[in-house]
Image 1 (cartoon, protein in one colour):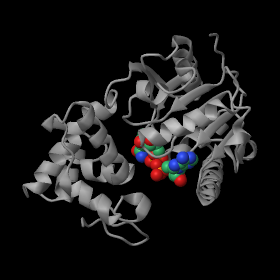
Image 2 (cartoon, protein in one colour):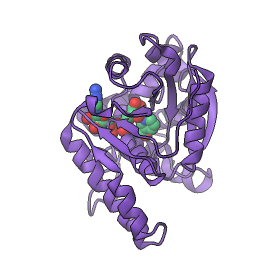
Image 3 (spheres, protein in one colour):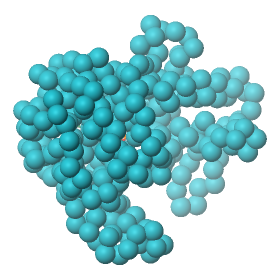
Length: 297
Ligand code: NAI
């Protein structure tokens, strides 16, 4: 299989939440026509409006010209049906972190896109091998794992499952590099590189909280100000979303046959139960809003 992704080719982004919107923003700024699909039409509207505002701000700050901002905005298109992404050379999926739902989406996409189109998943932790296993051509399924916030985070993990074609992984690697990112190749293992190494960072934070060693702002401040981390574990999980972070932990825990090192936190499960998902829901460990002082729940 020869794979070459032309610089101006059409990219489809499925799921226009925090990650999908960021991926669409970066891809359109890099010169691609970008088609954005979400099962919730309002999510597409919000994402495109948000990206437009960001381009304008970047232009006001001189980080791109106003003409470039207008051109990038014009390359972004919300679509109302999956069938509308038929001309995509690369489809990047950023929907809910659920194996069956992702498999269902890719099965549908296989019947829509061209034979040589690449299918990429932004999954944080689900096996790329498992996502691709039900496809007619699993070789074209690869992980393209961005980090939050996508426009600011350099790293992209390019994940190969057992059946992933090496040329497909290389094409995605080259594409990420052409978008100004710093890609790395990795094999599909639970949590890949970053989310695997990060599990103890979150888990020990929860344990400290549970044992009342210190409160969340203190733990965050210590890690940030003395530990050299850009964010403490709780403010980072509030940014990522507790629903997403919890499912990643569950998925790594299950993949390692319940190894207690990776056990999810009951405290976090309760936050998810409460709908306190973090910044995106206006409340996580901390409240968010126009005047909210960062006090923990
Ligand atoms: P999100 O909850 O902000 O957005 C997900 C979007 O997908 C929603 O707008 C939802 O309506 C849409 N959606 C759900 N099912 C769909 C379907 N079947 N077809 C089309 N659209 C559908 O989630 P977020 O944070 O953007 O995460 C998306 C994916 O990216 C997940 O797999 C997550 O694990 C992964 N990821 C998340 C990171 C984070 O920091 N939040 C970092 C890296 C990866």
